[in-house]
View 1 (cartoon, rainbow, N blue to C red):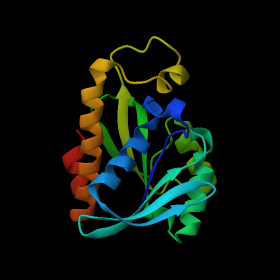
View 2 (view 1 turned 45 degrees about the horizontal axis):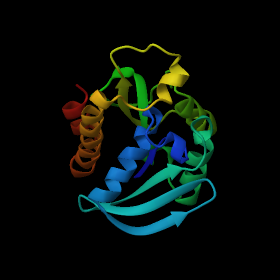
View 3 (view 1 turned 30 degrees about the vertical axis):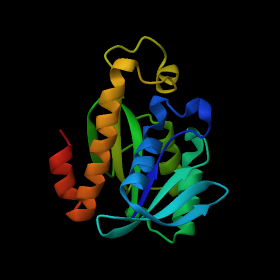
View 4 (view 1 turned 90 degrees about the horizontal axis):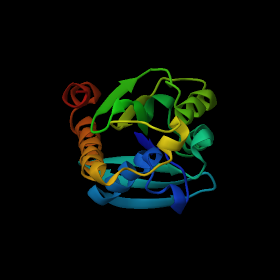
Length: 185
């Protein structure tokens, strides 16, 4: 299995809503044992042992709108099929604090997911969608996803990152269906 967290590279984007996919990858690294590190042109990747299984985790080096290029290169590099892909990303259609695990779904307007589907010519992969929708959105969607979480949202996002990691651990321990039944609330 290959888990790809979406986000934007660079310090200026590090704490933005759009980068929760990166945050989940970082938390996975802390929860597992790194076996090997890969520094490539389009991505950084790690072989990780977690829950007694070996998985691959990846952070693209491309900007969100070009994520698909990095995802495709990573799948080719690690010799993985589209069906092995778990894409972790922020989701504006889901309220803050919730996650939803889906498979074979359309992109719903998310530029990173659109890019991935276009580059792979398929949507036959699992998505771990992390809700970032706050109480009120008083700016454009682009400005909103590129803004940091509010101080009162910090604790919630920390919990949802941990929840996402636990969902991934459940996928590894049991299966996708069990994780979906436990975490799609």
